[in-house]
Length: 224
Image (tube, helix red, strand yellow):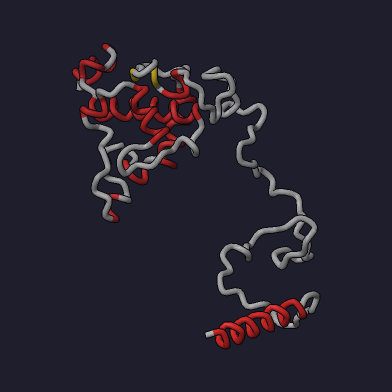
């Protein structure tokens, strides 16, 4: 037993001495990496070379229009706080109604932005980018994802959704629900409210009654 111990100890010691003896040695071939993980990434490293650009330099000016994560462009209508939804707006996380859709523990009703054409156009743009893939452009829940097997998509035209307060819809966009993921980290506060406003417009467009029209339009329908 003692002999086996000394034999193993000797082999281990020789192995350690051999490895230490190679310190500072430069090998021609690249090392064998059993678990490379994320060591080799297609990214630039400051003051290093790269094969991506023709001149071999990694340091180049950012592409025009590139915005770092968390940075706000000065003078932009959205994501700058000019709408005074909260102190900073954009991606704030205060307890205010504008950031949560809640008054205490109760969902509020009302959109904390001027509901005008610009807001609805912005909401339409953001809705068709982030929401239509599941809910389709009319909000009826028949987006392309449903055809790929996700059959649990809610229709925004259902009475259940139409009767929800604005704050609840905003909160769902922010935090997600069931199979819907959270869009709070991806969509700015103002844009979430713009989407809520546009969803309300979609609901009206699909459920409008003649009595809801202005008198002048009702008269035009009656004359046809």
